[in-house]
Length: 80
Image (cartoon, rainbow, N blue to C red; front, side):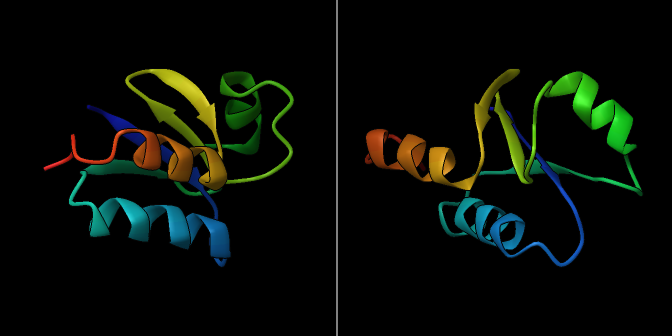
C-alpha cells in the first residue's frame, strides 16, 4: 500500500494524518505545499481541494484526515 499525504506546515490535521500512519506502522510519503509542491500543482492533482491534508492511497484520492481514519477503521486487522 502506498500512501501520499499532501500537507502544509502548522496544519493540525496534517500532523494527525501522519501520526495515524505512524501509529499503524504504515509508511507514507509526504509532500509539503510550498516546499515539495506548489499550490497550483496541488490543485491540478486535487481539483477543487479547499483543505489539507489531501491523501492518496495507491494512487487514488481518498480525501483528508477523516477519510484516512475511515480507511483504517474499515481495514482493522489487515494492517501489520
